[in-house]
Length: 124
Image (cartoon, rainbow, N blue to C red; front, side, top):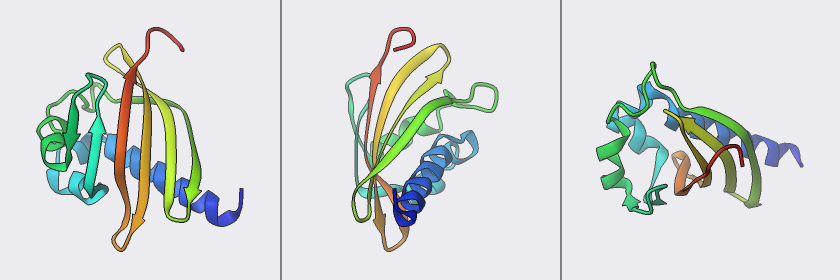
């Protein structure tokens, strides 16, 4: 992986981890700074979300300092210049979900363009 690709992947990883931070999730303005205006998500429930609707759950307390998300097996690859794909497992309150995120570089920085969560039983 080239240095430029490594920096792009690291920037996306840093942004993804910020988005999972309880302090960021509690602030809609900070969440919106990380979401692309065209953001979409297919959640672990199968529900489709956009940037406006996702704000109703990001600050709901399911991710808190007392109940943080545990992230494992985070990896990323550059799909094209300015596009990074991340995959990882997220464990929160006994629920394990395989996550996939597409980040794209915009004039204002890295923004989450698409996210998908798939529930996983046990340690898959």
